[in-house]
Length: 319
Ligand SMILES: NC(=O)c1ccc[n+]([C@@H]2O[C@H](COP(=O)([O-])OP(=O)(O)OC[C@H]3O[C@@H](n4cnc5c(N)ncnc54)[C@H](O)[C@@H]3O)[C@@H](O)[C@H]2O)c1
Image (cartoon, rainbow, N blue to C red; front, side, top):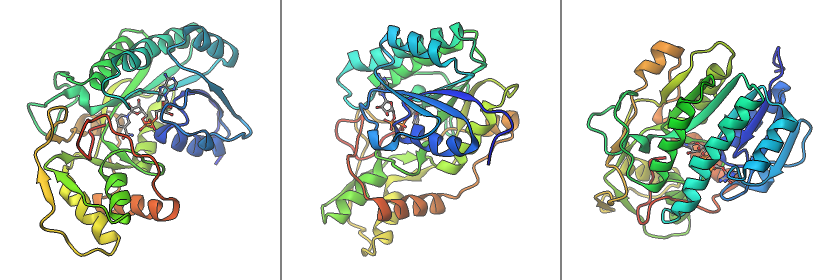
């Protein structure tokens, strides 16, 4: 499908899971895309040389690089998908990427008069929520390096004067997902390794539902602000474990160890998408069962390589 009006999209973190799915979604529509990525967690092979795709290797924490790249590319739209999280003890890197990097991106987007900036936020911004599902106006109480730095970044964005949308995302599940219980269980069970579950509950959102929400907020004139993008349904990590076993043809494992979540994690994270539905008219369409089935079929075809976590011990993550 070719879009009526081609966008010039500057995509930070384009070699990551969400970024690369966005590239696959937008390139066939005729949009021009420039990626800035330092490949901290992203993969070079997902941003191969392609027409209308330019890749700049470097960090968004490098102000001169960001200014120069924006000035040369002149984006109409900025999609900020770069984030640091892979070493929870590396506060310097989290702050450099998630705070300074955001400030650099915001400044450069303003300087080139981009019409819209789209940001992706972690639901860890809510900290340990006092209600479930979590409304978008719930107080922000991050307590990890990733959460704290991502909240600071979002708050700079909110005072930038730019037309922006910040999507607070449930666990988006789709091609190249390399974090959380799904790749962890799949990889370990395939290798005949033992697993344990935590008693956490998470909200899983299919990639196609994520892309539909992005399409809505990228339109010029679309509502701006902060939106929960989630199914609104919680599912336990044990449910995910059972689904992976079933998919791999393994017998149920009622005796699997289920432990309480660690100090750096949250027992339940289920963002409430009600406001998103009323403001954007967006709602998740793909069921939990189908979302998990699609993901596991993708792993059947492509395998699981590295699995990242921002947690010290547990096999799942609120992203
Ligand atoms: N995937 C989800 O379900 C989810 C949920 C909530 C929030 N998010 C947010 O969505 C965004 C994308 O997440 P993802 O799941 O694709 O993660 P990802 O790790 O796959 O992608 C992040 C990308 O940013 C790049 N990057 C890191 N530091 C950088 C730097 N300093 N300069 C340039 N590039 C840098 C990485 O190399 C990677 O390609 C992040 O902002 C994340 O906080 C994702």
